[in-house]
Each structure stands twice: as C-alpha cells, then as structure tokens.
Amino acid sequence: MEVIRAGMDFSEKKFIYFIGIGGISMSGIAELLLNKGFKVSGSDMNESPITNTLKELGAEVFIGQSADNVPLDADYVVYTAAIKQDNPELIAAKKLNLKLVSRAEFLGLIMKSYDECLCVAGTHGKTTTTGMISEIALAASKDPTISIGGMLPSIGGNFKAGSDALFISEACEYTNSFLSFFPTVGVILNIEADHLDFFSGIEDIRDSFHKFAALIPENGTLVINGDMDCLPLICRDIPARIVTFGQDSKNDYFIDNVKFDTQARTTFSLHKKGGETEVLTLSVPGLHNALNAAAAYAVAEVLCISPDTIRESLMNYHGTARRFQIKGETSSGAIVIDDYAHHPTEIKATLATANKVDHNTIWCVFQPHTYSRTKALMNEFADVLKSADRVILPDIYAARETDTLGVSSEILAREINKKGGRAYYIPKFGDIKKFLRQNCINQDLLITMGAGDVYKIGDDMISN
Image 1: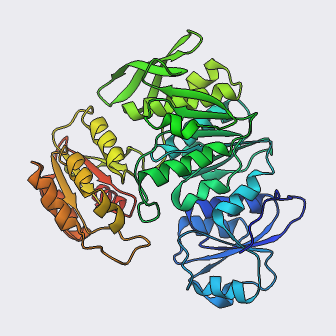
Image 2: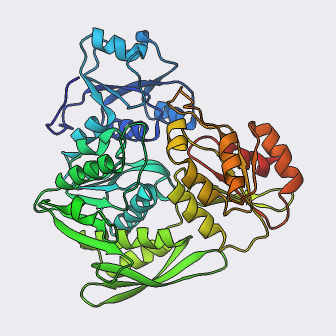
Image 3: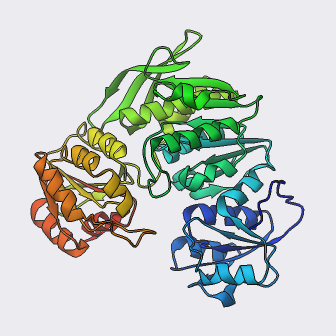
C-alpha cells in the first residue's frame, strides 16, 4: 500500500475507484471528486439512495464486489477499514499493481489542499458538533466543504462541496484513522473506552488522541474538553494553542444555568474567559448538546465568526438524522424517536434527555453493536439501560465481526434485570413490532437506539 503525503492536485482530473462507495464517508469523498470533475467509479454490496445519488452525479457504481469491477486504468483504489484482505477487489487491485490507499489516508490527502482544515474528534458527539460548526460556517458565508457522518438537512445529505478555503470533517479514532489527517483546527470532545476490537484499552485510546492533538501545527488551535482527567496527558508537548470548554469555571468557555423545556430543548449560559456571557437556546435537547454547542462556539470564534451569527445558527440547528430524531407517531399514539447511541455514555445521555420530555412510559429498543463492544462494556450497558422503563433487545448487530465471544443480547437482558431493570430479549424485528403494537401506547416514547438497522422498527411502526 502506498502512503501519500502530498496534497491532491485538483487540476489533474484522475480516475478514482472506491471499494465500498456507498458508505457514509466514502460517498462524501466520491461526491467531492465528482464535483471537482474527477472520474469516479466503485462498488457496494447493496443498492441504496446513496449509490443512486452517486450514479445520478456521474459515477459508475457496481452492486456486488468482483475482481472484474476493478478498472485497469484507475489512478487510485480507495478502501475502508471494513474491507478484509480476502476481498476480491482488493486482491485484484494488488495484482494489477494499482495505487491502494485507505479512506482515511485519501481524505487526509484531500485535506492538505485546503487553506484551513477543521477536524472534530471524540468518542461521542462528533456528528452533532460537526453539524453545529457547519451551520455556523454556512451562515457566516464561509462556503465550507463539509464531510459529516450523518445526514444534515441544510446541505441535503452528508457532504457539501465548497471553496478550497475551509474543510470541515469528522475525525474518527477507529483504527487510528484520524492520524492520517492534517488539521489546522482540531476538536476533542471527550475520550472514553470504545472500539476495543482495535484498541488494547483506555491508555491506548488516550495515546491515540494525544497523537491526533500533536498533528495540529504551532499556528493552529486545539479546542478540547477541559473537564477530562486526562487533559494534561493529551495536551503535553503539543505545539498548538489550546482552548478549553466544559462545565468547570476554569475553562476558557464554560456553561451553567442549564434549563430544559417540556421537549428537553436547552437554554444555558456560556461564559467566556474575557468575562462575557452569552445566553444560548438550542433546538436540540440535552446537556450533552449544550456541551457540544460550547465546543462549536469556541471553534466559531477561532474562525472569527461574530457572536450574533453563532447564537442564531445554534438556535436554528435542528440536528442530523438519527440523533434524538423525532420520527413521528404510531397509530396507537406513541412518539417514535430514533438515536444512534451505541456506547453506554451516549445511551445515558439519550435516556436522560428522554426523561425530560413529557411522556408516560419510555420503551427503548436497543440493538447492541458488535460482540466485542458488548462484551467489554456489558456491565456498563446494563447500568445505563436499566433507567429506561422498558428495554427490548434484538440480537446483536455483528457489523464486521464473526466471533460472538460468548455474548448475546439475551445475556445482556438478564444483566439489566439483575440490576432492577425490565428488559425483554426478542431476537427478531417482526416479533418486536407485534409486542410494541400491543404494549406501547398513548403518550409513550418509543426510542429505537443503536448503530445498526434498528431504526427500521420505528419506521415500520409509523407507516403501519
């Protein structure tokens, strides 16, 4: 594999092939290149609205993966961390001696061509905070290029091509992907144990985030959660200016006086180091989003955006798909909410937010994501899920994994019940929907939760 460090010369219209072009990040890169006049093709295992959109934009997309799909004249073949070494297209590209590059390295290559690159990292909150920053930059007429890990309504998807002045992107730590990036402004929202199928533990994760922070140049800025115990470890010997946010008054930006209305929408005070205070109101719910907004505010001031624009943009931000997204109402009068939460801290924040919304009973259909995460955090999952009035667990969404590691949703249900919760193990979606139609009724909240395809249950409950 060739590791590339020079920037992408957009004046040279190359031919790029993507293995897994329908992924949320890969599709965004493909759309950027199509917008710049590159020739783009790729494959995905399933047809989707994303692959159809790419076709409409001029990409050739193969459904199913085969060695025959790989073009002999591709300048680069881009693949994701999910692609295994026995993938037929990866094998074919190697045999053809084509230039292979990972998605993260290729995205880093593109970033180097922008005047300023803003990368948002953290175990939780990346998509929401990236969305908030994007809304602010759009309102400020910065014409940013945006790559986000969710569907942002204001740009009609997960990607927007803008000028070459500012690139805004999420930065995921999985497989150390973000270490291939070139941030001039970096954000670290939080650091917790996750992706334990790759990292050896929390110290390994913290070391990775420290390396990410060290990528920011001396004339750049790191905006970081100052409430973290590991702050000195992450910030040691980094050349960039450091700006902190959080709830502690020692931070450069800190929040207090947090209040919620009956829909859990948030109003709070944001205090700045210079003594100024802003009162901000968000259209998205929860304390965690107030902290995300504090980070976004700090970043926006680094970008020299006016407080009025920041304040109005944050109020007008209504979230991305699958982040406490109110989807509709069932025929029996229950409100359906969908959320991407798949880590205990995220689940805790989502359920705390739900409890601030007017409701009778909270029904949480949680689909655990990967065996490795479920095994490593079994006790933590049980602790946070017991706070829902009722929990329904379908089978674990395996994603890239094949080894069950001896864990199951049935075991997690037992652990929740041992801790005083009320959990039901119902393996199949069809049976879950039957159960909910009989039991989830007027003014109940039905929250579908997880990083897999559990959202389909809520969608079906609304439409039928």
